[in-house]
Amino acid sequence: MAMEYKNVRTTDISKREGLLSALDDLSPLPAPYDKNGLEPAFKDPKPEWAETNCCSLDGFCAIDTMKRPETQEEEDELKVKFLKGLEKLFLDANNKYLQPLSLTMEYCAKCNTCSEACHVYKAANGDEIYRPIFRVDVLRKLYKKYFTRSGKLLGSLTGADIDLDWETIARLGESAYRCNLCRRCAQVCPMGLDNGMAAREIRKIFSMEMGLAPTPVHAKGTQLQLKTGSSTGLTRPALMDTLEFIEEDTYERTGRKIKFPLDKKGADVLLFHNAGEFMAWPENPAAFAILLDEAGVDWTLSTDVVGYDSVNYGIWYDDVQAKNVAMAQFEAARKLGVKRIVIGECGHAHKAAVVGADRMADSEERGVPVESFLPMMAEFVRNGRLKFDPSKNDFPVTLHDPCNIVRQMGIVEPQREILRAIAPQFREMTPHGVDNYCCGGGSGFAIMNSYNFGDFRTKVSGRMKFAQILNAFADEMEDPDIVKYVCAPCSNCKGTIRDLLQAYKATARYNVQYGGIVELMVNGLASMDRPYFEFLEE
Ligand code: SF4
Ligand code: SF4
Image (cartoon, rainbow, N blue to C red; front, side, top):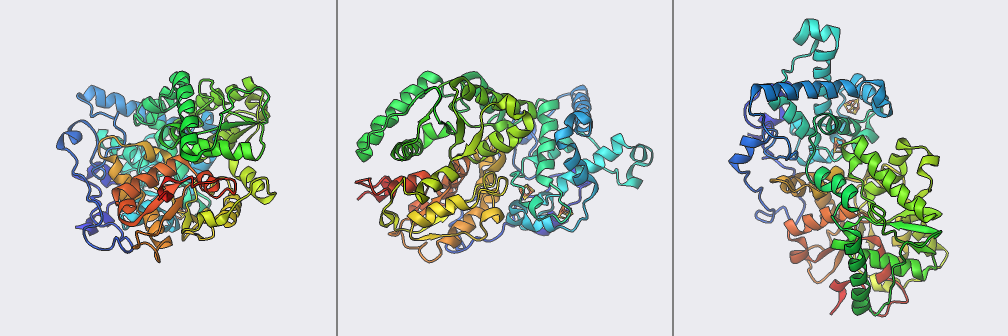
């Protein structure tokens, strides 16, 4: 059965009935998950989902807003919009992406080096639709058929052999949401081509031209953020209550008094958190407060709309949304007159505010420099502004490298410098650094749970990461008395790793814990008189 999905052709995207992959031949997991029965099964999709949405790529549905047209007129209108969006990708107005996209379309040598680098393709054990070049091949054929002279005149003789109907468009859109945009493929391509960027360009057709994007990233993501101030829906009054709660809770748990500085004009540092931290992992902003105070930093949080949420989901699917969010964040910083913005533990926020924003507006328009928290914290460790007792962190620790911070921005060493100083049993994953595998939650997957999409994350896109975690702790894995800590200094990665550990019951069965790097730093601070982690309490 599995072999049939290894031989799917790009033309099957319009011709073939049924699924193009059934994901029935996943790559094996290492011990102890090589034993039957330990891996959770896929939840069966409900038949009615396929009646309203596109589930015919692989049984999953990512773009929950993409409904099957009810009339031929509706389908024709959709086709027109799709083709208009496709054409726009290759116009000068798309100049920030035009050249790399054109090169990716024109110069692929079909060497497949990128496939071997792709964790999704590897997890699916080589099912053709997850090959990084699959979706670009479809795009190339469609462009040729509708926008080149030879394609229009000679059609399939020139390779322009894909028919355009709703199912084809919908499958292509879905396939753009089977890529984590991690760009591991781009890093290894001998021609310098970028299939991750191309997947995002396809997402742009759907969002910017057809108005179709997954609800969690758009309606409940960027739109909610611009309206309420945060993609979590956390308003300013709710933020104030939450911060007060975190201050009280931190004192009760640790005996440590913290007070979040708010809207301090002219502060040296405006700290930007992913607002998800306030809600899901309040110990993370509290840990930042403890460290910055102990290091004597002049810092503040903003309570302005969008000024307290570093999230920018726009960078995954829509240039306009990305710019709207980024500019609102810079405006909040400009209003306070802070000297610099420091991004906390959120990988895509790093990329959006630093390398992404650099493409959206010049430095004058942005107005405030931005940097990552990691080099700053490494400096405090190096120069002794923070003092540690590493024996407090004497348990196995491994590090997940968030793609956006590490591969895409080159921040590799600071986090290792910190861990070597504070965690005596730190060990690397294999591979690591710029060669790391995505957690499986990149590009929005971390928050996308519509229909059955969460299963794709925990069983497919997160599979290689889960295997890496098991391998990093191979010697201690099966001893539940030994705490094992996966350090993931990114909110979205952390959420994905939480979901992986829950789905595979790795915390309950084997005592695998997870969290950020600042929590580990606080746990190891010489000045703390009790553990910061609840899982270390007697
Ligand atoms: S590695 Fe580059 S040239 Fe080779 S198949 Fe992939 S995109 Fe094409
Ligand atoms: S960007 Fe990452 S997930 Fe997407 S095709 Fe490339 S390696 Fe695979």
